[in-house]
Length: 401
Image (cartoon, rainbow, N blue to C red; front, side, top):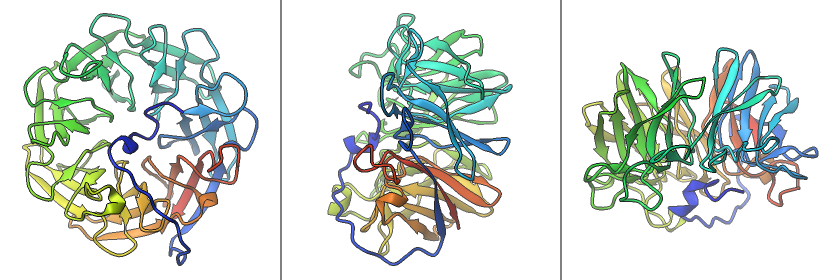
């Protein structure tokens, strides 16, 4: 699997011994176990999108014979899966997608972490019938971005995203990353190079959201706090960037966000994989993670610190979705579990909806959720019934909260 496939492991280590536990109240279903057929996709690192009742996503790798550079797949809610496209099928193709997809004009668009004509990853398009095209290869020009880990957004017909490395700054090995724009015809522009000013956010791993014409995102490192625990940033399409908030600025703050943001009633919400008021050896001693809110003016609040109650989830690596008046997300670990699905209100009332207690039911949900007809759908990086990968090749799952 690619080096960045589970980004969390570079920040916090958890060594849980999984024991038997009572069944969760919610109903969970393994919709599909990856690695079930030859040349199937394996290790889904990203979430899903719903296009006309069919779910689409990506896997970071491929089982079986070469090419083994990942896939775009489709799966129905009843579990009929299809490999739409296998990366590495053409010269200079992308490889190892870490991010999910968006649908624009009947095509699916996404990014690959590796591959392309300049080996810095790609922006690609693919039709539901499997016709794929490398729209842009990173590293094609001087000071370009490199290695995109996040999904794209469409703003007025132009695609925007982030790269973890590359750009003009020399403050970080390999560059501090970029915000970029690219047209669907492949005209790319570096909007902003991180590390351009002191105490800047650096190395973005997540995507962007558009709030009234300004783009917002997170980085897991950088910022003005002494710990370099990451930041929330804003950037205009013309390239004016601002660090909105630096994590670790106050006691018991969240640290190291590895997920993007959502906006609820004008306030931004997200998760941090570390930090918070609860510290545990099971969380690497760096805190069990948080849900936070922050205004566009930079007023931040820890909404919830994970590990605050028995059998809680810990270390959320994915972002949130809003369903009704609640926010839903996943944690990659938990007390005696292989991860959880949780809900939390904006006022901080948290509940574990489902705990993954058996690897065959899914293991390590590192991606977020989508809601389709009142049911939550997501992916786990490991687990499932297929044994090709030892601990399982990953799953698509559904939960009825």
